[in-house]
Image 1 (cartoon, helix red, strand yellow):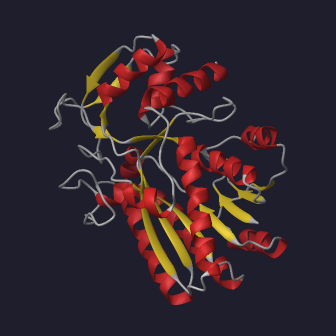
Image 2 (image 1 turned 120 degrees about the vertical axis):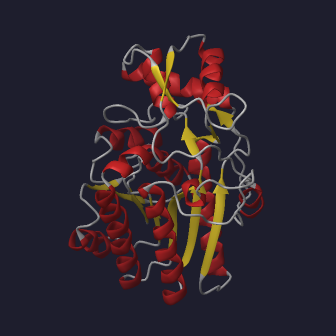
Length: 337
């Protein structure tokens, strides 16, 4: 049984589908603070399998313990966290409390109930603004530009210490910018309120929900002045989580007592904000009106991955094109209208 925390969220729900499709049993804990209950039914509809679901905040340690008492948890994929860079600059204490206390409780239960495989949803934000592109796993860790990024850095440190002390196997998955939707169009990114991420803002503008797209800054040191990121399709990302779980499970069969593995998950290609706008227009034929506004606190200039370690060790590679990813986002948006 695999515990997926935050499993009704954007990446968590796609990963739950991938796990179920590969024959794993899944239990989800999600407090629904940034997700919707109907996603559970969509997961079951896609896979034809039942999911055990518990709606509570992971800071409630006593409730989490009840889940571990009820199920034999052999692996944990920990997604549950607040995740908006800009918002984290406004309410930093809420980010530190939620993201770190929930992780600590997961570690406590992992220790108490002898669950040895943990996959952590980390982020390329742990690198801060890297000096050299592409970013490898050996790129120096700088102080993150946002409170969100610092919670990811701290989360990684907690898990490194925990794995060494308690002989656990941990995979730290540092992913770049997930986009796209499930090929069935039954799952996708579902932001509450004004989107914090670029692509949902683009699709909402295309559908008329937003009058125009706001582009935060055109004075970055990039070819077109807008920030550059590595955009990876969410289904490719979900497959990487399952591959990482299998990698950790194999280490169990190899009798390795503890392991801390780090993988960058991206396409290896950087695209600017304006590149995304143009690619979306090409993929859908829909023009996107936009305005330039001041930079957003916590944003960096450029980040794209060198995913070769994940390609090699996990036998995994991002395969979905940028245009296909954006087209799937648009089909998902239309299903919501």
